[in-house]
Image 1 (cartoon, rainbow, N blue to C red):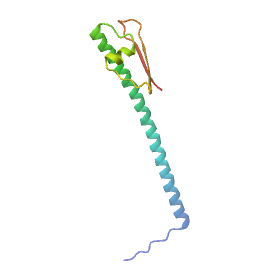
Image 2 (image 1 turned 120 degrees about the vertical axis):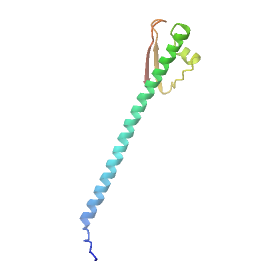
Image 3 (image 1 turned 90 degrees about the vertical axis):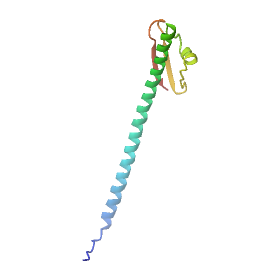
Image 4 (image 1 turned 120 degrees about the horizontal axis):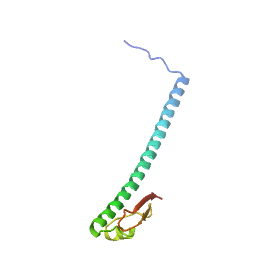
Length: 108
């Protein structure tokens, strides 16, 4: 049997095009939003990982030498800590050689 398909009206075609374009724009906006969310989370994780690396190196120095290093330069030169100074600001505040230093890592 042969069935005739009813012809779509011009207004119906335009509506379908507008709905398709709107869905495409919505999908693109959602993708951009998700990318920004993931990128921000990765930046926070990178800063936390760098802080933990500096802290681990300071504790290792304390275990080996019996005192925490007096500066961040010591950790970089003698314990192999690598810091991207163009991306991060690292503060390393020492109160006493036998107390854990205060370490803060911020992204520029």
